[in-house]
Length: 441
Image 1 (tube, rainbow, N blue to C red):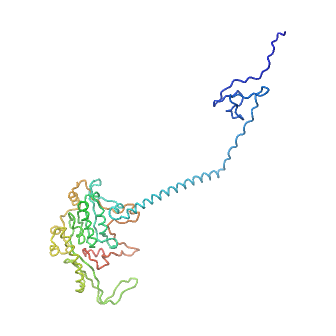
Image 2 (image 1 turned 30 degrees about the horizontal axis):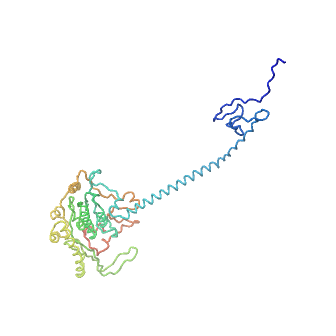
Image 3 (image 1 turned 45 degrees about the horizontal axis):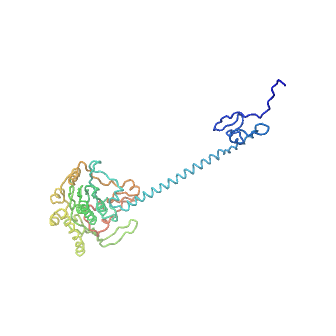
């Protein structure tokens, strides 16, 4: 027997213990595993490499080829693409904004159209700003002032004079749209020589409707003059006060002038045409009611028949005028017709006969009206329209509602009067004829 220990038979290599790898997989040391980027394929479950004949570990498969890197565009192409994207984005944003702007514009136009379609009263004042003419801006009570200034006309179709005026029907519409919540009362600021009978009567009637509808008072304050149609307009006010030195009255009606060209021998039809040459001269005549209404007329009278026809019409209007003032001011009609006639009266005489109720400066008058309306004068403001606001101006509105603008010169030519009060001799007027020179030229 040999003393040597018999050699042990050769056996396959025993795999080394498994080691943990990141991600929770296991692999044998030195052998690519499932989590190794060098592996061509994952091991079977258990984490060990499969055995092969001969007892040798398998040969690792070759590494997988890396995917090709994406081709980088050139600088110009890359910039062009980015610019195109930005441009398209901005373009889309611009389109979206234009659509939104269009919707807003349409909505604004619709809103304006809604206001403009009811230019009367509140509809118009929505396009105007209000200006406080007396009292603190923060006052909680309001009296609404409405100016009646210049010659009174019926409406815009009457045209323009050389000086501004008032459209009676527009003021009537304004009064008709005022509610009891809008103001504690109305103050008519009078400074007018009168004018159209229909425009004056329209304002007077609207004033009565306002008082009946709202239960609120209407006051009148004369600032320098309230003659003829102005007297017609304000006679029904709850109280009439006048500033010092004002003139009131002229209760009468006038028509004319009615012109007569005697023995015409030529009519100038040239560039500067319009002239008439006569051998008998030019005469004019006014038809009036109310003693002294046409004081200052230097022209001869019409025929008796013409005068009688027109006089009948004027007398009818005069009777209505006298009746209105007599009833509203509680004056006997005979006093107006026989004693006062169509005379203009100073404040003292006007108060004596009952045309006005008192004489005060404007601040005192406003305070008095606030107290008379049952308002706290220290917490009351008097407001009137200051004209169109930004929206109104943007859409071409150039005047406050009810006001008649004066004619303006055009292309270096003098302003041209277009008012029916100046161009129609057949319109009966309740106005002081002395105003014709400034209004009609």
